[in-house]
Length: 535
Image: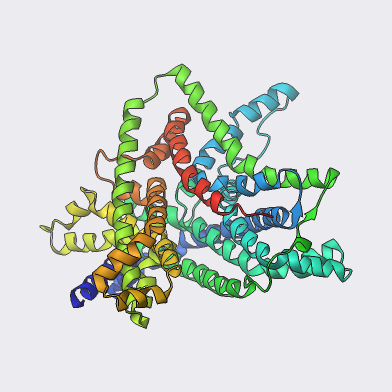
């Protein structure tokens, strides 16, 4: 037992170390670091802060509008196609944001098919709208990709109690607008805030869209500081500033989640008298169109653009099928290795907290899962910072080789980033195993390893499989950590999609991009099955 506790402690330190090292870099403050910080504060730092906040502001507004309106529509109203739309609205989760950026850049740019057709059809001249590679373009792409976070949480919150209370308000004479504002909105507000916080964390962590669009955000700035300027102090200081913003948003998300537990407490079961309000005619058509629009813009249209680009490229040149097989294999094996390690670590941490609950075990588990809220580029800085220090003070050290010339550093970064995904699934599985089950097993002689093997593991099969799948898919779509830490000849689907699109070879980039979309559909379809409830 003592050995397992020691191993668990070492595992937590291993998972938390990259984030802690970024913060620990400030303990080495000296004249050089002060000069770097002063230079940053007078040059790029204000631009990074302003751009990141503006981008977060627009994305926050966009996801709240799209997510909450669509969730309210499919939860509170009955109209033709409502059940189908309720899961179609999840599809943009399968489309990586950087793939949407590639598609819309090709479609909307000056030489793209839409502007070319409009100029030819109407005789217009010049650019018909601002360049999509801008802050507003990035905000639009991220909004279309991230609104399902708000949609999912808001729909769950509204489905619990809103129909009953809306019906009660109607019987008391309240009009529909008043019911929406004074009943539905207060119920959904914590869920909306939690979903928006998740979307904002993803926005701050984004690298593919901001880098491809040339938007000066923190993630793009950290990447440039380390790999272009070769300035580890600048990268560490920018990473710390980004962690402060992420910490504020994480606090908002945690606060909203605690309030959600209050508002979603069922007070009564749903009855036949509290069904969604039925819409007919023009009203039903408007609501259906309003819900269909995010699906078309966030999934269907980008998918069609990428398919068209792939079809055009196949008629002009031979597609790199052999290289595509290599990219797919690298993505699959990295995803599989990380997923198995993440699930094993999550099972160990969750069992330790279950078997011997204590404040230390609870907070250490939370600390281990902190990396999911941390952008991948910050984790990269946390891993490479000690390597740079060792190479400076101990040139013969092989740490740099093991972290950058092998998959060790890459898998480590993946585990730090996505262990929380596995933990959440395993802990959810444990929450469905009552404590009386453990007590009964102990009375029958099963303790320790025997208890886990004979009682817990058979009941955790489903949760473990879900965790394995989710981590696998997340690893395959991860871009910044893979871009920096991958060894030679270890290109993945995400990296090649980014590099080919950056080189304006969209037809070739469509091949790995569509593969990522196909992979991303698997957990989305599984999630949609769990959400299919009557009413």
